[in-house]
Length: 456
Ligand code: C2O
Ligand code: CU
Image (cartoon, protein in one colour):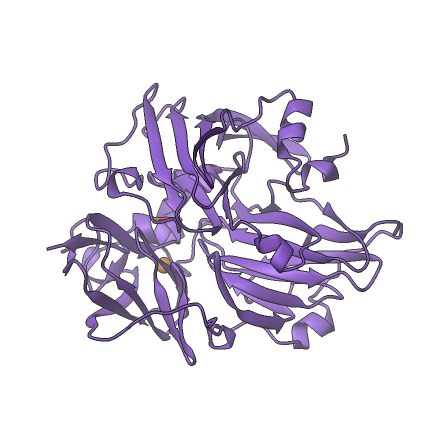
């Protein structure tokens, strides 16, 4: 079996068997029409993974980075057994998927952390379809490689969208050292995060071939699982048609490149109409130097792609995605009437009243911070202003978030607030519990940029 076959969606069970792994889905008991009970087992443990030409010690789910893809249908009942083989406490968070509070995986808030050798069973309904991911919510464990894709398929959607084939592309920034060692410097000077040793696409520096056939429409589910890197993404020779933001449908927007913050996801359609082998390019946002982590390889094309030294002119000059280009579908309705506004100032950096580096929301550094109190059934608007020189991808747990765009509201759970920018993320308080709202830069979260949203 060729590695590229492993990348095909739907090939996962066969691929796992071929690799000597058991297939991840253990059961398929029919519960209700359209609802299937699905069981997975996830075991985080220290391991070594090959990256580039060397093997590196790290922590991973089921021995690989990313962890195994969890793929279910909307309406399925999902049961995930976590067996902690790490020398540290851990939890799993289902990023973007609203689940009951006790299943959300935030240590000390929604559950007790799972100790070494411990087991915890997560169980929830996959009530919303879309591209999500799962990751550890303890400290900086995400940055070691404890993440994986979580796909909730919408029945019939790929047929409606005329999708010929589908790939999941998970991006990461790779540290060869430990994140805890990088923490002290991660807040300093530039304050973005550690100095990374490389970038990964589906766990490799590639270039990984993604096979396509001329004439077909290819769906790419793009996930930024990095701890501290906003990525720019593009495919030479092709436009990207964005159809979903954070897993939820938007009116199609056609762009040459897009920026994707940590924790964000985009579903992209690419029309395969230029046979050849084309670089799939990724850089840190703002960098002119891309890495060719993958190639879009048409069947039968044999000329290899060579990595460009700078972003190709067509991608550099073409349109890049802005939130203002995202337009709501007619099906997406969010009633903003009567909202309670919570003003939010994102700031921090080196020095200031906290001594050392701190990242704050309204001047408070989590966990020494007051909760935001909300009332069940009301609409709440988080009116965010970034008063720092770093971008902050702000993530809301437990609810469907709605981002204000010029044409209305689009469903989004993670919103990249650029330096000095103001954005409003609203939600209906319909899932009583205690929920985290935080920056998805793992280092910023660790240094205080988080708050609890609590129902009165
Ligand atoms: Cu993806 Cu609170 O996290
Ligand atoms: Cu931040």
